[in-house]
Image (cartoon, rainbow, N blue to C red):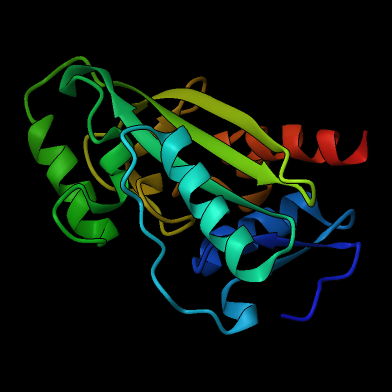
Length: 196
């Protein structure tokens, strides 16, 4: 493994949408390098019962492989009327990693239900060169739309309306979303920590 430079930070993900979103937020202080950039295409297990456990599992796995500081994330959509589902199982809620199918399942389960309160939560886990591990949390409250709307973003963005807005994350501009999303809030904490 060729070590990354001081202005690069390894993000333990294969998801290009996440990399793009984070690069918008973290630039120019750091250049985000993904697993795809390092030609590592293995699926990293997520066997934890919480976002924190999954984020740690991913970060530790990648740290051991590449022996370089890295961070990982795990995010979930938590819906009040569904007892917190899909939560930690957000990525595979329908049984497969397919955004549209997952969104459709949520809308079907909420059909006829008036309580549509929900929140997005992101946990970042950073492992530094000395193996020090730090967590950063970002939460955004909102509600679930009656139907999928918008092409921006990914995951549950087309059905999530952030509090104080009428548009879904899928309809809001990248500029607006990066000021208020759960991932943006966690990223700000990460950036502040790295700069300290």
